[in-house]
Length: 85
Image (cartoon, rainbow, N blue to C red; front, side, top):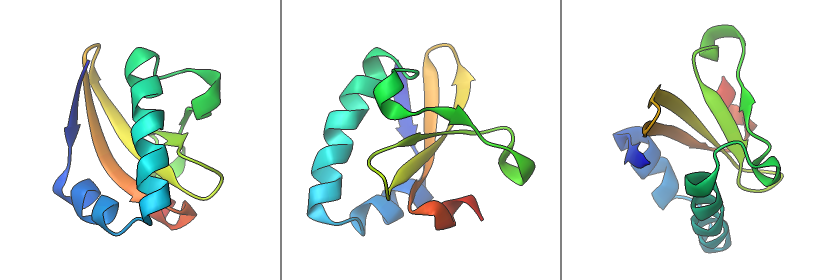
C-alpha cells in the first residue's frame, strides 16, 4: 500500500506532541497491514467530509484519509476533533 501525505497533513503532523508522533508511527504500521483493524477504530465520515475516512491515533488525535484506490491512500489531516470542522 502506498500512502501519500498532503502538505496540510505534513504541517499538522510537525506540530503534534512527540509522544503522539511516536504513537502515530506504531499506528501507521498497523494501518499499512489492515486499514480496518479494530484497534484503529476506522470509520467513514459524514456530512461535508462524507468522502473521507478517519482512524484514531489515541483518544485525542485522529487521522483523516482518502482511499484513492485499493493500494493508494492519502493522509489529509491529523489532529483533534477540530479537524472534522
